[in-house]
Image (cartoon, rainbow, N blue to C red):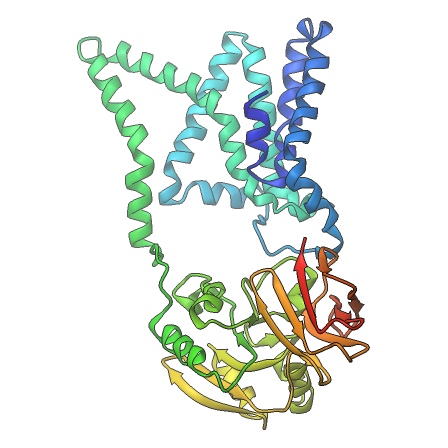
Length: 417
């Protein structure tokens, strides 16, 4: 009752972890489930739902803006799952599978099916979800490859049985020094994940823990911060992690540059808002090469873009064809471009717009009957006072922009509540 609600906080798809194990327990322990056990199990589920409603309910309410995606945690069958487990840094997981198989054989010989069936059944279901979930409707949107870790978690009780059996075999094989061998092997097994992962990270990958932007990006971010003569948004080309030191760091740029940003904070967001991303030589839902210079100009004005940071040669080549865009700085592979034009953060003139964390401030609109702001609408937004806000469809963007009727208010605060 305590661990269930907390464990569910791992991920919204955590619900798939429970059914197979619970069905196995009920099947193997049917006698005890004739009493109050079913009622307690139902109560447990209700407690989990109640505790987690604080974040599951908002998640469900925003499913309307989620887009189908196969970008994350997908596997092409059990063979790919096996290849992941057999990688050098994953050898502890491979050892766990081996010990679990030995544990299953032990439990079958001892006819301890009440221990075997729930753990083995849950592991089998989760392995099938991880390996083939991308081919199953609904489950394919649950990033099914992530359940490979859960498969290993449910194998761990069986691996414990197998490990105990292995240690007993060691003691029988070495009657004089069996205890020393047993302790030495136990320490080795427990430490293996640390040193194997360390070796793999140093030999196969370039990843290091850092909060620093690559030198070239940091230099251009500083220039963007200084260009107060160009009020407006910074548009950042994201994409493969290799573009930014093998990490997705562009989400830090609003903080470093002090500017609103379009094209982030993560280029593979599985929401309809992804339309406004800028990644891998694509922007506004299309490859850059499909835009005419005039069309791209119009998009820059629609989203109030004044500065563009690029990281690929293809994007740089495209921007050279756009007359309103000119190069102002370069640092390594990265380039910073400015956008000329007479536009601002609202369609039409007559108001001033500023923003901060959870705040859009509109001033000078007392005599304006209606204005459309260059910010996305959300049903949780609220305008104080007599003013009214409403969604307005703009161009091909699937997410509406904010329409505002000041209704005589010279100052309007829009916040999310």
